[in-house]
Image 1 (tube, helix red, strand yellow):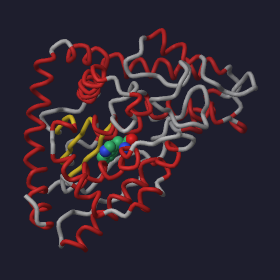
Image 2 (cartoon, protein in one colour):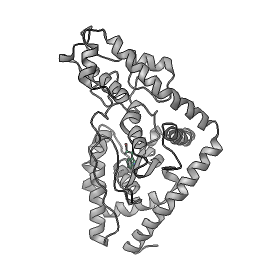
Image 3 (tube, rainbow, N blue to C red):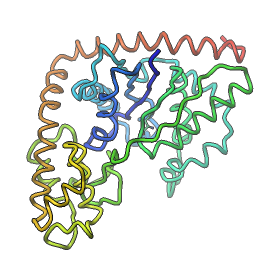
Image 4 (tube, rainbow, N blue to C red):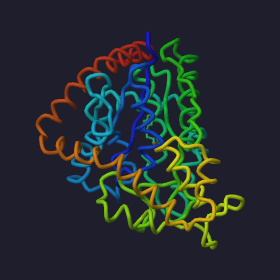
Length: 328
Ligand code: TRP
């Protein structure tokens, strides 16, 4: 039997090149070998309620689902669904809340960073990793392809599965922690010390998957390189290495060959190639996305079918859980 894969992206902000190269493209590459479930995690988007715009959230969830499909995930082969459509995610979260020590959550790096300097923090922000564990454990997931920043949350999901199994008997499959492939991490074009992020302010930071050509050109040509006027491979800065990494992710060209090719040229040449490669990848994705968004009834049907299919798996797991703890 092929291995079960589960992953998800939050429908907040705009999906960008980092999401595409670091996550979605890897999902597409493996979709034939594995039994894939890809989720739009709208319940996770509620963890920062100040940022929630209810009408926009619902539209955004569809937009992200359509981007999965437009990027090459075939909804016939992989399930693409919206988290809140399968109620068992919330139900399992409650049960796991009761078996998870508070201290495990308080030491999560992402929680500490997000909570820092805030006067009041919602319970949801602390609970974020429990909901994420529920996502994973509901589907007997074996592999969770995510970026390095989520590794701690996956390890926590493992710990939670093991603890539950110890307390109530074998119920959950313990997921593997997979190390993301090297080079899957795209940094901000304005500041290559920061991972490209959906929430970063400023227009020079990320290339959105739905950005227009003009905007994309502006972001890439404006990318921060270094004070040298020409490409010097020996002391390439983080910004230059990021541009090279993006180009390599698109073309597969080895970095040393690329460095040799650009040595002594102005950075505009490297940036120009990054721009071309980006447009070549994004143009068909944007066209397909537009088509999909133009037929909302069809998209909703695809999402409803997937929710029904994965909902049956989730209900099977939940039935085991209810029996194990004596509810329902
Ligand atoms: N927390 C993940 C992120 O920020 C998104 C996510 C939610 C997720 N649930 C998940 C990823 C389950 C993998 C599996 O990237």
